[in-house]
Length: 116
Image (tube, rainbow, N blue to C red; front, top):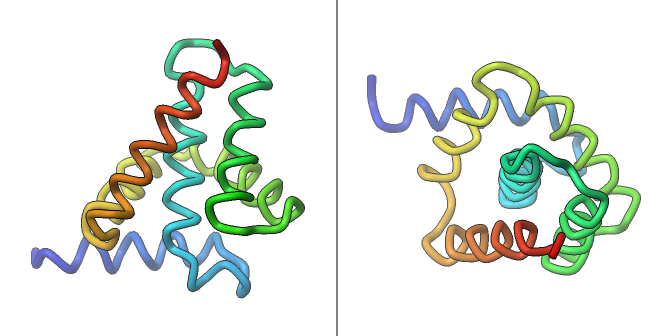
């Protein structure tokens, strides 16, 4: 299996989930998926954490609120699918720049600390 094969498979999977307006916005998808997945790690999903994800996606990517709400809901639904998070991580490793990966880590900490 070549190094690009997993990335191709993951991109195809995410593109199936995406509407036409999101397809070129890989970083938005990866950030939303990772942030949504990180929230319940402590066993509790708090409103402040979801609000933090919403704010981060709106501000960092200059996305409209309605689009962000849809994106979060879509990622919550897909996070339940076995293997989805692993696909997202492989895609992030293969496709995001170093700066984008650093930004993602910063976003995760912001969400993790949003509930106090």
